Length: 64
Image (cartoon, rainbow, N blue to C red; front, side, top):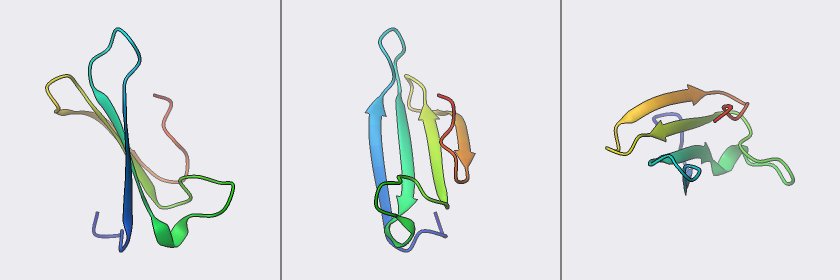
């Protein structure tokens, strides 16, 4: 997160049947009206033990 001067995080639970969370991280400096998670952004999927199961970095949101 050293790239984020003004970080924003969004956390949401995984779909029913799965335990864990998706955490999306972006920076206010790069937010644009009508477009969320403008580069740079990161996403982390946490499993039920709150350990990192998967992560991505870039302009596109991950498929999960």
